[in-house]
Length: 122
Length: 145
Image (cartoon, rainbow over all chains, first blue to last red; front, side, top):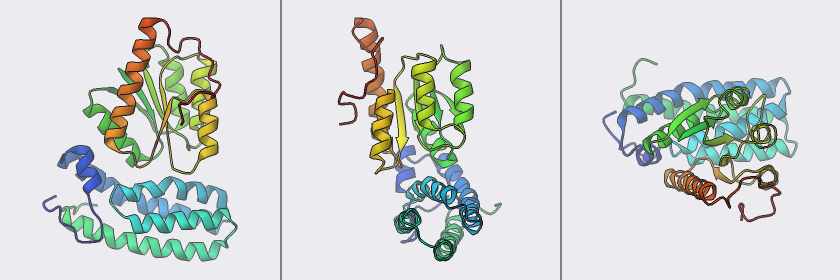
C-alpha cells in the first residue's frame, strides 16, 4: 500500500489511527473488507428475495459498522435507512434495489482500494 | 491477562484482537457465540476478562453473559459490544452483569481505557475484599449511566 491519499471515495484514517500506521494490519483489513462485504451483501439480497426479512435485517445491522472502518459514511447512512425501513415494513423488492445500488457503489470502492493498495491477487 | 473476545464479524474481531494485543493482553477469540460458550466452559479458571458482541447467531452475547455470571459464577469484568440505539438491550445487559458496553466502530482509546479501568477496578476490589465478589447484578447501579 503506497498511498494514503484516496480522494473522496474512502479513507483509511480509522485503520491508521488504531494501528499507528501498521501497513501489514491495514493491508490485511483491506483484503478482508474486499472479500467479506460482497459475500455479506449478496447474502442479504438472497435472504430478502426468499422473504427472510428478519434474518436480512439482522445481517444489515451487523454489516453496517464495517463501512465505518473505511470511512464509507454515505453507505452506512444508506444501510441504516434500509434497516429502519425493513423494520417498519418496507417491501422487499424496493429494498433489494437499494442494496444492489450499494453493492455497485461498494464495487467501485473495491476497485479503487485494490488499485491504491496494490492488491492484485484477489 | 487473558481476554476472551467473542465476535462473529471478522473485521471487528480482527480490529479488537489487534488493539488488545497491542496493549499487551493475551487474547482468545471466538468467531461465534457457540464457540464462545465452549471456551467459557473449558477455560473458566484461566479467563480474566470477556468482551462479547451482542448480536451473534446460535448463542447471543446476552446468553454468554448469563452463562458466565449465573451458570459458571464467573467474577470477571464483562464488556459488551453493541451498536448505538439499543437501549433495551443495554438495560438487559446491565441486569445480567455487563460492566460496560462499547459501540461499533469503537474508538481505540476508549477500548484501552475501558479494559484498563475495569481491570484495575477488579484487581483493587479483589485485594481489598470489598469488590464485586458475591455482588448480585441487579442493574440498579450506574454502570450504564
